Structure formats: structure tokens, C-alpha cells
Length: 226
Image (cartoon, rainbow, N blue to C red; front, side, top):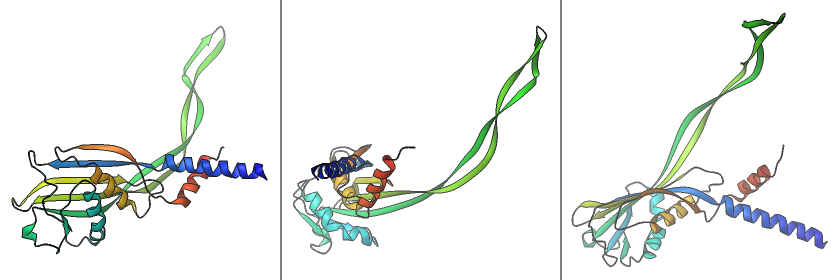
């Protein structure tokens, strides 16, 4: 009985370790900023979604909370204070972009043939060069879907009527991505904002949640030997 319990514990622990390893996914961060602009954490800031972006509007409380963790202490949602009273207005949007691209593959088998034009006589024996040619046995085409998720912030100075900061955090479609990917994307993107310079780079980050059924399927696939 103890041996069975030990084996089950080992399996669970193995799945946990695999989950931690496969929980990392590549994200991208891009930003541009007006050089020399002075951001003030005490200045009143309104956070609002771009017109018609209902998905982004539902995440505004979380965006506000995440910005507060960066030290901003005068954050408001649209309607809480008059727009003219705000120093900055942040327009946010969440975008899902789907693209498709074709791919094709050719199946073939090698076939050996004698090149009679390259034969020669040596000591009464004929020798010919043997070459290998591919014989096509099949051809397949497929249409693959590619998805990108973006969290975009357009940060405007309300007095200057000018955008002073643009931020785009993105993630490519990958294994075990779940519906709550935007929460992780928002958190990682805001935590990386450098208010002194623009940047563009890729990085690996863990997901807070993932599709457990997908993880189990991947575990079985990785454990299969042929």
C-alpha cells in the first residue's frame, strides 16, 4: 500500500514539475515615449477603454489595481471625475488578431537507378554509377491558424492634447492558453513599463492559470515512446 501511495505521489509531483516548466510562455513588450516627459504618480489619471471595446472596459478595475502597484495613487475610471480635471487619460484596448497561413508537405521514397551514361570497363567488367532519386508518393496542404493577443495603452497628456506614451504587450498563441490570458498579459506588461525610455523585446513569463486537461494531454504525449 505504501508503495502504491509513493508511486502516486511521484506521478503527481512529476506532473506538477512539468506544469511549472510548460507554464512559461513567450511574451513581447513594445513601447514608445515622449522623451523628457515627467510622469507624476500623484497627478489625477483617468483610465478608460477605447470606444466600443467592451472587453477592455471589463478589465479596467484590474488595470487600475495593477497601476496602483506601480505607485500611482490618483487613478479614476471615466465619470468619477470631470475629464478636464485629469492630467492624463489612459485609453486601453484588448485585441485578438487571428491570421492564417498555408503549409504544404511532400511525401516521397528514395529509389535507386543505374546511370548507364556513366559506365566504364575495368578489366573486362562493366561498372555503372548508381544514383538515388526521390519518387513522390503524396502531397498534402493545410491551413494553419495563428492568434495574437494584445494589451495596448495609449497614454495622453490632457493639457497638451498629445500622446506621451504608447505600450503594446502581446502574446502569441501557444499550448494550453486559457480564456483568462488577458489578466496575465496586463499584469506582466504594466510591471515592465519604463517611464524614462521606449523599449522593444521578448521575454518568457509564467502563466497564473492554464488548461489542466491540455497539460495532462501534453504529459501523455511527452511520455509516449515509439
